[in-house]
Image (cartoon, rainbow, N blue to C red; front, side, top):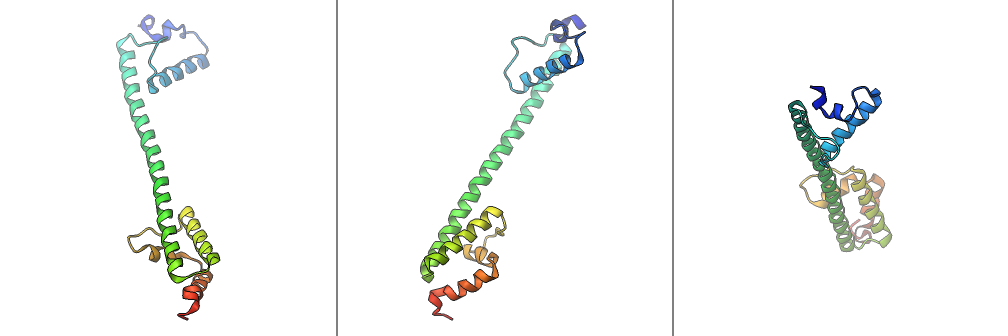
Amino acid sequence: DPPQTWVYRRGLIDQHPFTQWLNAVYFVLTVFTTVGFGDMWAEAHAEMWYAMILMLAGAVVQSIIISEVIGVLTDVDSVRRELQKKRATIRAFASYCEFSPVFEKTLLRSVDFQVHSRSTVRCDRSRLHAILPHMPKQMQRTLQRQLFHGDLM
């Protein structure tokens, strides 16, 4: 019964299609954002069912969005932790091997690049084993020359 619908109460039956569309989007956003209705509400059974289905769909959409946001934040945090662990390992390794400060900075920049570009392979092996094989060959050769100031060469 059209006189019992919010479309009729708002005088939208004979309005331009854009005006009808705009009011429909307003209705959907009001339901999805759980703001509630102050200027429109469901009275007819069909409207109530439609509003309830829309509310359930809104709850699902919002939970998906929240889940994705949490996933992004968790991933950013895990990348930060991974970078801190790798940098600490490189610093300890450089100190133990008595690398020059310049070469230590070069190694740290390489680790930063690897983590940020996601070029490293994540695995359960030791941290150095995960870091060193991915360095450029020239850097690996320099690393060999730098080990203990070349005393092992």
